[in-house]
Image 1 (cartoon, rainbow, N blue to C red):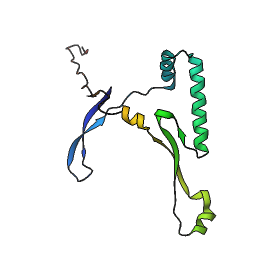
Image 2 (image 1 turned 90 degrees about the vertical axis):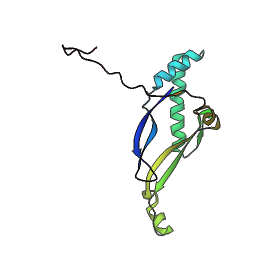
Image 3 (image 1 turned 90 degrees about the horizontal axis):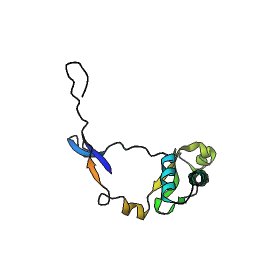
Image 4 (image 1 turned 45 degrees about the horizontal axis):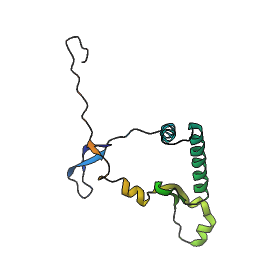
Length: 143
């Protein structure tokens, strides 16, 4: 389930204030939690799942460091991009070479299957419940 909250913000088109739906902060699911979930859904041991996921992380990073694009089936594709400073001539670019690079980025592109499965029509989306108010009695304790 995904929760949202209603947030008043400046419109991107003009200075008017409008109300927008914004995703509420979701909990972070750790690698350990994913390992537990995979273990429950399969006949593979916790240790084997952890070893495979550790190796997967290592290999994905290695591929990205080599400039390769990594396609992980229905999860999607990871790839690198870069941004660089511009210079006036090709000679200057050759001279400064990698020193022109400002930033390397890792990008993610979801697969068609991911796009089809993660849609408002297939996910329960609800407004974030308002925090419960606590009342205090004469002694100052909440209840």
